[in-house]
Length: 170
Image (cartoon, rainbow, N blue to C red; front, side, top):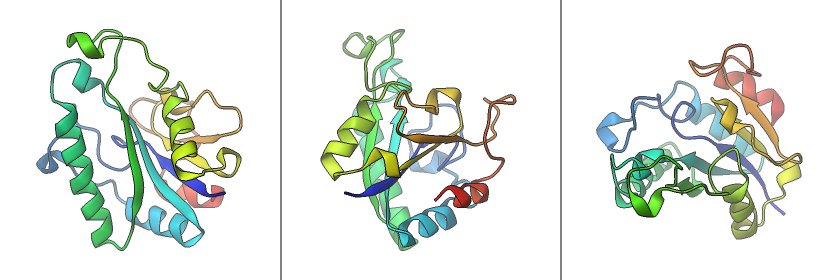
C-alpha cells in the first residue's frame, strides 16, 4: 500500500486569498516545492484535498476549479513533482447554488475525500500525513496524522510554524 502526503490547497500550497480560482491569483507558499520533493523522495504520493465552498456560494464553477488544478499540476511538474490526484468538495450547507447547498461527508473535517483517495490510490491512511492551516483540516479519522501549520486561522492550536517544520513528521 502507498502512503500519502495530503495537502490542503489554500494556505498550504498557495497563499490564501479570497476564493482563488484563476492561475493569476495563485502565489505558491514558500517551501511547498521543497517539502513535496522531500516527501516524494521518501515514497509519499502527493494528494491535494480541498474544500471549495466558492462553488456553492456561486463565486466560480467546478470547471474553474478543475482548470486551476490542471494548471497547478503543470507547475508542480515544472519542479519535477507529480500531484497524484486533486480532490475537492463543492458543497456547503449555506451555499446559494441549490445543487451544492447541503452537508456532505466530503467536506473537511469529514473524511469522505480521504476515504475516496485511499480507495482510488491504494493509500494506507495510518502511514500517511495531512497538512492543513485550519482546524477543519484535523480530519475525523483517528488513524490519519494531521499537522496544522500556523496561520491567520489558528490561535494556539497549531503544530508547526512553517512548512519546513513538517519534514520531521515524514
